Length: 322
Ligand SMILES: Nc1ncnc2c1ncn2[C@@H]1O[C@H](COP(=O)(O)OP(=O)(O)OP(=O)(O)O)[C@@H](O)[C@H]1O
Ligand SMILES: [Mg+2]
Image (tube, rainbow, N blue to C red; front, side, top):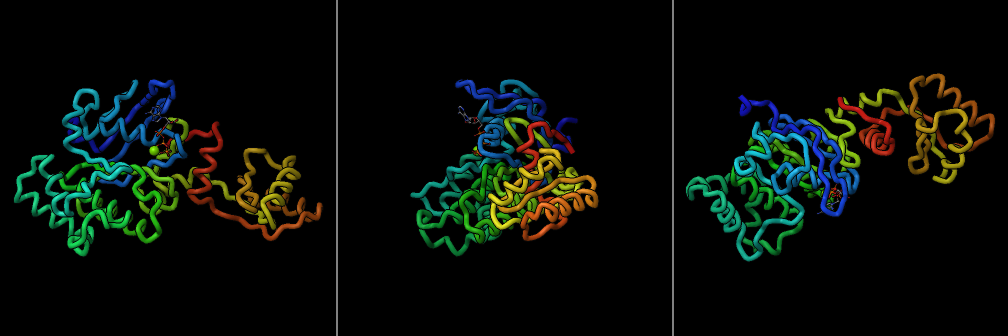
């Protein structure tokens, strides 16, 4: 019965403390549905890589309940390992082997029969546009192509879940877009569940079925990008000033009008989170004009995933699960 669970991953109240005393995970819970692209978003040190290391069985959790593909992480680590693949920041490519040799070597690690491995290799080379690179040595590939090859290598074993720790970090926009297409293909054509971490919010927004925002070892919100936007249902008023310091000065002067957790400075703008847009728009307008505070514009804005991420990760009191 457990095997037919609709969830690829269920983690409940996971804690992890490293030997040096750092508490990397502090009661994290999340669920990942089978076949979806799930993105973990979090600032440096939030615990993303620690969680991936736990989910991929390289690290044991201190406490908590984790099941992967319906299997218990503590009891069935070997069976889980056979069904998943993980692409970390260090590529697993052997620079002395050719592209094809790398792929066949990978298939031997998983004991895939040679004929089946060849078929799978050709399909992956074609699916991820690697044919044009076959004639060149692997060491000459660009970072983006190496990463694509690394992912293809990891798909040789037909994993049910593919974990990717910051797959697009440091890539230019073309390589990142190629990577996004690749991930969509992995979900659409192979039905693989994709679990990835990223710092890029627009990537999470456009690519993911579900986003989980993490802070200090714990989830602060989980849901579709759309649902996360609904979480901050209030509109925002954005007042643009000529500089960041002008925005800062004005926020100080307006601090008596709005609650401190409703105001934020972003570049040269002041953002006001509001539940009563007409009232607050009028209040801000009257205040700015009456006090002759120069500003370049004032407008109503829908929050982006960026705004939500910043708000949730800045405000330690905010907690939500959608
Ligand atoms: N092997 C380790 N031993 C001790 N502390 C560690 C170890 N690995 C990570 N940490 C600490 O645990 C916390 C979480 O780290 P982790 O690498 O999981 O975060 P992250 O969200 O992946 O960060 P980043 O975005 O920088 O990759 C950090 O404070 C980090 O310094
Ligand atoms: Mg990390």
